[in-house]
Amino acid sequence: MNASATETAIAKIRELIMSGELDPGARLPAEGVLAQWLGLARNSTREAVRALVAARVLDVRRGDGTYVTSLRPELLLEGIGFAAELMRGDAVLELVEVRRLLEPRAVAIAAMRATTSQLHAIGDCLRQMRAAADHAEFVRLDADFHDLVNRVSGNEALASVLRGVSNPAFRARVWRDILEADASERTMAEHERIYAALVARNSVEAEQAAEDHIRSSEAWLLRVAQSGLPPTC
Image (cartoon, rainbow, N blue to C red; front, side, top):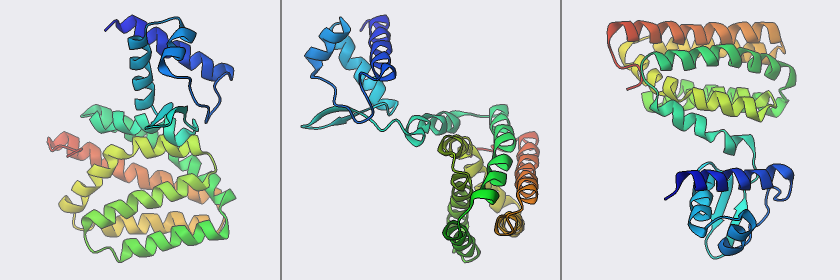
């Protein structure tokens, strides 16, 4: 397969989308017609469509055709999480640093924008964390807590990026629970401080509480990395 021809096809389909000729939700023409549009072979067009499906730009509906997706951030930025899953060593620490730079501000914005129902949902997540039956459930709810708060910021692109870069940290928190007996208690206390600031609509305290929480995880990951244990196991 000619890789350059496939890349050209990908670029041309992207141009059609960016120009507005193919809007979100639009149905692409049949493969042969699309290939004529692009001025390329059907094989290159087919490979380009497959690549854009993997990137969540296009969606193939069997028996119906190929459509442009909604192009929402949560779809297009999903690849960040996949890439983060593959990172090892110092790259994991860099991802945690990215999270520390972005998430506290998202939490500060959430403190200003949270609705009563959103605060109730976050509080309910905390209650479920306290009652978690095992480490795996606690860690899952931990990730849910952060995602709920970040989404309250109202910036789905930011929330999606943070969801992606948190993937390695998600696995690391399992190790933290196993290796440090009081890790769950500290995490709960740090989460409750964030939640109290959200309820109080105190964006300054919310931002500081989030930064302190992430710095705590960052310091633990650094200790694990220096000890030679696998921080993303």
